[in-house]
Length: 369
Image 1 (cartoon, rainbow, N blue to C red):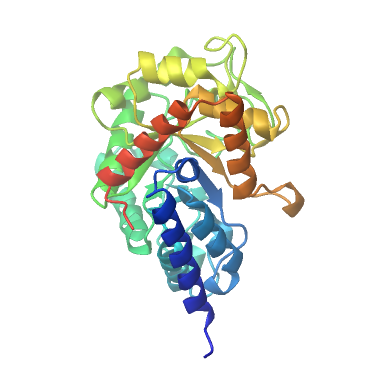
Image 2: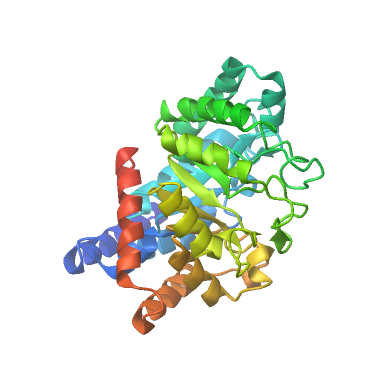
């Protein structure tokens, strides 16, 4: 009897799932570590090219994936992406975060040229300052994400437009504006539109990227002399009013917040002490891409993983938008974390803490198999 590819991967998924149930009932250390990881899916933009990806998802119980424009097939874009997402969910053993950066304007993966709707940048919406407009465009986006099966949007940015020469925030029109109150009001409108479709919104980039002079994608970004305490206001205001589903850390250095000058993602003083203990946020914190040059140029993979987990990061993001020889595998990251637990550099209780936060967030948004 000839077995087609579709049947083969379903069978593999069943085997891995059965093995997991037999030995751990999804409570194994490997499962919990897997839930803390999200990976980009390379250049895959159709099911036909997804064989190794599907096998990796089945084997390692990843917490989720992130999609980029390169994962949108130029031909029959909506249907191709929908089929790919459905297959990924089918093959995975567990509930998945399916994430995308869909801020609108220049940070927009689902573009008009692929047949998707027109978006507007946060800057243009903030300049207009009409909350109905912000809700309208945000709701169109959340409706689309929901139909596609995407359940996490790495947006909105609540960075303030402090430095008008900022290459990664202001110049890309990613901030609603300079006023913290204006940013909060528009971010809430954005989040409301997403919650109506049960989509998680992730505020970024904590503790503030709007005053930076440099792009942390390209190297170390030090905001010590430009950062202002008011950059924390949108986070504190929205935490206190229950408007924060999750937060993404920034890879910026700020010696006013961490005298060791660790980037925010690797800093316990910024994540554990400031965000969690002082500001009262006990939800999920996502890292920004662990392969951005602010991290890779100054810290090895093992050190970055250890410090980020110990800082209080719950989900580590590896976008793998790299040359093939520089990409990291799920096996590699899981092995590093297990070794760190074995040596005591990361505690089991720290893994358990993140796993429980992730599980709670997924359950609250109905993200299930």
